[in-house]
Length: 97
Image 1 (spheres, rainbow, N blue to C red):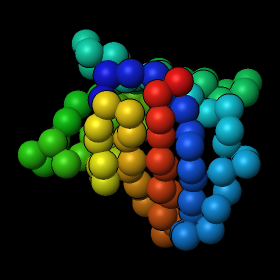
Image 2 (cartoon, rainbow, N blue to C red):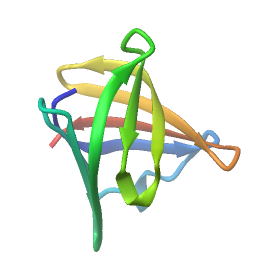
Image 3 (tube, helix red, strand yellow):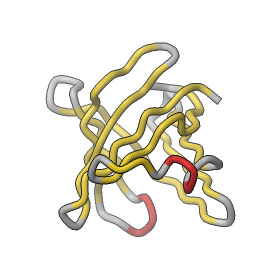
């Protein structure tokens, strides 16, 4: 997962909202640091694998204590995941920047 990723496809509750997040980037470093950048918004935190490497736990990002992402696909050129927030399912299909 260590890479800088950009959005290839983004869906919320099955509806395509990719055009709203085309400039969103996430960087996962090998040392466990995480950052994101989206226009004028950015943040940093840390990441770790959990649950037999099927999930990634982000900690300290945007003043949240923690956030769990479920990995759907993780390969050299694709990183797909989803998370649920306020009963909304957010699914990201990321590719290397």
